[in-house]
Amino acid sequence: MPQDKETIDTSLGKVWITRFDNGDVSIWTPPGSAQGNAIAEIIDGRAAWKPKYRAWFVPPIHAEPLLADIEDL
Image (tube, rainbow, N blue to C red):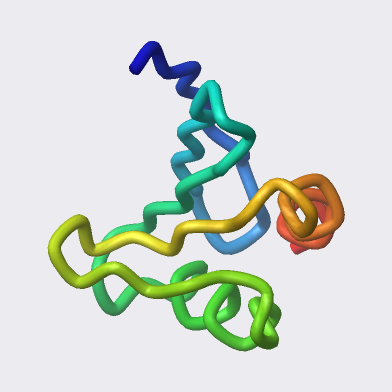
């Protein structure tokens, strides 16, 4: 499955984004980071934590609004 990777620079640090062909988006931050803690707070039920990948997975319906919230950090 081809993937498109990008980073978002927030005031708290970088956030790594992977976009998948099916519209899902994964969000990764360094464990225990300030940006990771902030993202965990703004997820608000819009994504699922996948421990195997240590990343949040966001379904297409929530991807763009959630990424806009992350860009505002």
